[in-house]
Image 1: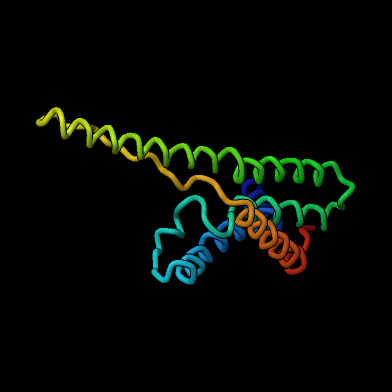
Image 2: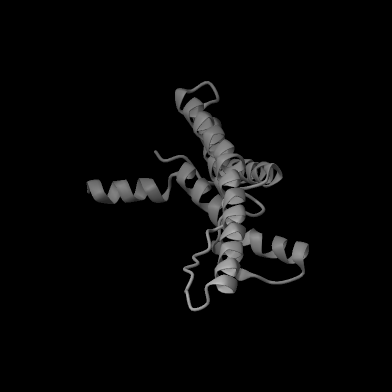
Length: 164
């Protein structure tokens, strides 16, 4: 009985539905956006970090939107969602993006060292494992993910009836 009602609660929870749907939609939308920008298809964008729009931003803003609509913008839960969202969005556009920029420089440095070793010390193998460069987001990607999340959160709150 308890497990059944718990699962029902999870599957009908508009905050969870909105946040997870926002992640999926944002990740799927990255493929056609990349196509229009680069004129080539790359389905792998659907499973990668970074890019337009930010699925992290979409998730946290849709969560906060549903909670704000259902619990009120004066509730402590809404306040917690907003603070959580700001931290996630700041991290996506700041710290994670800078880590990606550092990865670019480190990968270039490793390539140059590898070429130097190849020229001067033939027969030595150089271990090269490229660091992932696309980690974070440009501010516009975070902003657009946030807008997508607000729209999806409002839509979810309007469509999914409250659990009684």
